[in-house]
Image (cartoon, helix red, strand yellow):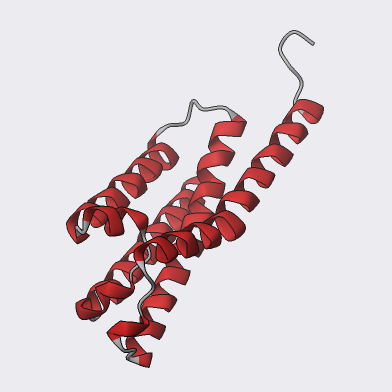
Length: 150
């Protein structure tokens, strides 16, 4: 059952990434509305896609192939996957909304505002909840998992 759950989690992670990538590339002319700081700083779609795939491949590798890992670290990779699935799905939905609304190029955010909007979303909806979940798990682990010296 554990391997099926791992397979499902990793499959969902890659499907969410594929959804985000396909909706991004669907109407490449709308790249001026991109808010990802890596793209805004490098102007390279290839770099963004390679970075995304490397991160997901690393997480997939840890989840699927490394069994000798602490509860905390395994929880970190699982919760990070869940939040990546969420943020990539939201990115794909956002890409679709921009594509269907067919905005004027003048409606694109200036680069500094786009980066600020990206980080505000990521901090509020991804990093802060992720951090709170990790803190809560560490407290749980300290309270309920006996140490070898106890």
